[in-house]
Each structure stands twice: as structure tokens, then as C-alpha cells.
Length: 437
Image (tube, rainbow, N blue to C red; front, side):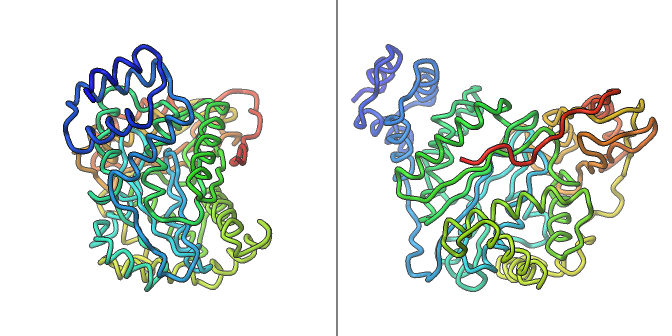
């Protein structure tokens, strides 16, 4: 069928048949639809809307546009976690080793940072030698040896999604729930999972900032997962401020290693708390434990014993990285980086953070991408010294910029200063976990 006929049906507000959606996905995958036709189709979808059947049909089409991985010969539950993205959002590097230490196989396919959000692959590549590009046979071999593989999307996994997402990003059509669901779930379902937990962010640093919309997204993701026979749950979590102590690729890996080593600072505790809760939900989903409390106890044991750290160490070795960072996390921190403290201009309480501005400022330092082809400076970033609700005196350190030079730090200093709002009255307490779906 002709692309323009399918576009016209959606333009006129009609529901697309599974055959029409299959024609769109096939044209997207094999190039028979031009980019301008694809973007016209996407805009029509957003303006006219997609129902649940259409959403699932697009998900199915993108899933089967490539290969679905088969881990049935690995005798363990298969599970993964996915986050919708934020600033300082680093929990994957803690969750995957924890789950592996608890008897779950984790084939974690992750992405790169784009815009104000960080990417797990960029964090991993701040470990010298670490390779995120592995063929399926090697992914399975690594999983058998250590219980987890942390890799990027291959050309065989949901190729339709890879093409569609790049066009959506370039045409301001990313924030639409049915297409977000199709993009996320087509990749995760291709991992051959038994269970999936989703970390749906809400707040000033999230793609979807309103909690009601974040809950709507969480429900749509879970319903789609169940429609494809994958046990799926979601936590809606706070992104009204950077998560944990550090934001920036090497800095975040440093924080994760400190946590796995049992050396977390108080500023790192939110990262640990969220990692434990997401992991605990998966342990219950996979029937390793009967309750969240029992799962938390198991997680505490594998952290305290060092088993989770050893799983990550073995994974780093198997994926070509320098595992000595597990013994000396400080070697990840580049020497010669300029550290510039940002101080409070007035006394009072920290009442709000423009987390989007923080993430964008890290990008300006070189720590993130504006375009997919941009390179990343793994060493730069931001250290959060205070959290919402903390009382400050004028001159107290709010945070620290990690930059290549003073000039680049000065270029973002005003944005960072105004991103942290101080007022006379204390704010309502923030909750890390807002809702469970």
C-alpha cells in the first residue's frame, strides 16, 4: 500500500489496521518510506492519537523488525531494569551486579546519553577498555560466566526503533506516550525476559515532568509488557533534583563503585536506596523472594559480602575493561580537572532545583550530547552537595563543577547558580519513590 494512503488515514483521525502499521514498519526498516513520509506519519499519530491496539501493533512491528534474543538455555530467570532517564541516574551499574549475585541473569541492553540525560553506555566506557559492543554469542558467554552483560543495541535488535527514534528526536516528536512505550518495550522485549522493572522518572529533570503523566506512562508500559507475556512493574520516582552525589559519566561510575564497596557517603544514599528498591521488586517478580522485605535482606547480604562487587569486577574483565577500578575507584577521576565550588548567595532552605538546567549545563561542559554523533568528555560533571529541604547559610557550598578549565566552568556557572532555588521557608519533604504501578 502507498505511504501517502496510510498517512492520509491517520491524518483524518482513523484507526490504522495492523496491516497498515506493518506496512509503515516495513517501509521504515527497509527504506521504502522516505524520511519526510515517516515524519509526516509520526506527526499525524501524535495529533490524531493512537489507541492501545495501535500502540501494541507498533511495538510488535518494531520488536520483530529484528531479532529476539534466546536465553532459554541459561538456567536462571532473565530480568532487566529500564529507566526513562534523568540526571545522575546511574542505578543500572548497581542493580545488574546485585541481581546477578542473587541468581538472576541480566541481559541489559542500554543506550547512550542524548540531551540532558546520561546514558549507561557512556558511563561504562569511562572504564578503560570496557567494550559495550558485543555479538549475541559473546553476550550469552559473558552472562554464563558472571550473570550479567551490559551492552548497546545491536543492528539486529529493533532496527525500526533505531531509525524512528533518530527522526523523532530531530522533529520534536519524542514526548508522546504510545511511541515512548513502543520504543522502550520493543527493545526490552527483544531481550527474551521473564521480568522487567521500569523506573519512570517525574519532576524537573524528567522527559515527562508531571506526575500524573508519568503514572500514565508507567501504566501504559506495564500493560504492554503484560500483553507480551512479560511480568512488568514500574516505580514512578523523583527527578526533581540530581540523583545521588555525582552527575557525569566517570563520576557516576565512581559513585556506583563506592556504593558496591560499602563506602557510600550520605549524599550517595538516594542512589543506593533506589537501586535496592528496583532490585527488590525484580527479586519478587522472579520468585526469588516472596516479599520486598525478604528481597531487601538478600540484597543487603550480597552487598555486605562483596558478592555484588565481585560480579561487576568479573563483568568488567569479561568485557575487556580494567577491573582494577573496583579496588581503586579514584583512578576513574581524571587528574588536572578543575573543581569550582558554587556557593549559596543567601541563607535559607533549598526549595527547588531546575534539574533540566543542571543536565544541560553538564552537556555544555562536554559531558553529554546535543546530537547523536557528538563525542563525550567522560571526566566532567557536577557534584551535588545539598538536597531539597537542606538548610543553608550564605557562602555554603551548593555543589562543585568538574570542568576541563576555568573558562568552561565560568560559562555555565550562572546557570548552575540559578538552578538551585533558596527560600526562607522550608519546602514539603520530597519522596524518592512516588508511586508503584
